[in-house]
Image 1 (spheres, rainbow, N blue to C red):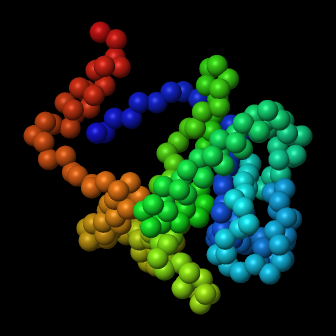
Image 2 (cartoon, rainbow, N blue to C red; image 1 turned 120 degrees about the horizontal axis):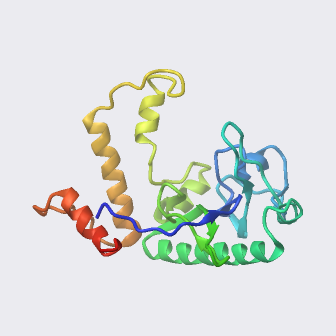
Length: 235
């Protein structure tokens, strides 16, 4: 606990999102683009007549450029990625294979827990040997959209938003009271923090099938961190 051991990577300049459903809220999401009447996007063509939150014929990768501070991510096609020199053709082929395989495995694991893995973001980097390595956490509510499988069909038939893990309790609470980009943030009540923790505990237990346990040991946290790091520190 409290210790993560990592390896330094050079992060690849393309952000990878794999999508299995016509969903999303951002300006680069396929649902937003589809509602504008676009059908050609990210090197794919989507069929006419699709409804919000409908399952895609097959999962697709929707890559974007990794924006600099103050800029916005921009949609890319595989051809543009290679032509602009962001990745080599071999790197793109490898990265695509990894991303789709990870997503298929994630969907399989989610289905076993009564969940639908709708879409997810992956970050990849290159190590000192030039190998492409997965560079961040995956398949958590922070990087992924999950729906509850039991109620999806009913919600979809009604044209309603599918039930999901609501990870935006604090964000929504703050946004209802101020402009978080301009105004001072009001003090967040303890019950709001507790409710957010409850949602994440529920997500952990549902996604992993494990019971979330809080370490109630008597060892001080700093001592535990030092002990956990000791095996990685030269004597």
